[in-house]
Amino acid sequence: MKSILLPLLLVLFLPERLLAQKIDNVASFRDLEGDLYFRYHYDNDYFSGTDENYTQGYSLEIFAPIIKKNPINYLLIKPLNSELRYGLAIEHIGFTPPSIGNPDIQVGDRPFAAAIMLKNFSIATDTLVKSRLSSSLILGIIGPAAFGKEMQVGIHKITGNTIPKGWKNQIKNDMILNYEISYEKQLIRAENYFSLQSNSTARVGTLFTNAAVGLNTTLGLINSPFSAKNIKKKFQFYAYSQVLGNLIGYDATLQGGLFNKSSPYTIPSAEISRFTGQFNYGLILKTKTLYFEYSRTVLTREFDTGTSTKWGGIRIGFTF
Image (cartoon, rainbow, N blue to C red; front, side, top):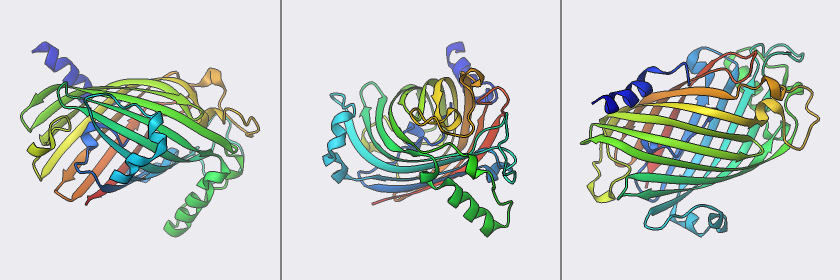
């Protein structure tokens, strides 16, 4: 009994102590059944009443049989005896310091930064051992070419909020090339009402280089993403929580691009927090054709003079 309670307590009650993963579309609790679907994800710190650090992000994601023919898939991991699905996503993330109306460099605070990426990924599910292995190849750009300034200024004009004036000091243009591998294993399952999984992730590249481990749990009316498709129920409604501990190697949104060293302001390597923690939680509703999610996140500080941050998000998906 103790072996079951300990990981459960860790997942539910450690939000402030333990990733700099901002958008995650491959976690098992976000599984969408079907070979063809579209999903849109939007994050904003407005949900938590703040306007700093990770300030906004979005993702447009699609799964379709035709993606199986993408030649980039040869670079992804394809385990034997697994059900394979392939997807594409466009992701955009933006970061600001606390005083967005200040045109000067804010020494000791996070630099302005934005990145846009194209993500090619696969999800391999082993229904016998109840595990999922995901791999992703990410290409993109960080810097003014990611139009973070234009997006935030436009939104703030429409909403009547403070106009950001510090984007001239943002991280300069540089290439993004990243590779990610995630592994998830089901540990406990109680019928269609409760499940507990372990998860681990490794990222290597010019945007993020880090490693993460954690646990996630779901509670409610749930299909198992590790089971055969023919036993799925059409309606699901459940809550999830996920706790993650992350070992940080490199973060271009703080330290600048790996190749372009002309950014006017970055956080020195010695001031980067090498261990961070993230707690995600939310509610998910699924029907035969609809996916809806509301999520919240708490992230511990990412550099010595920084602060912890919070944000929220919504996801809307459709299967065909």
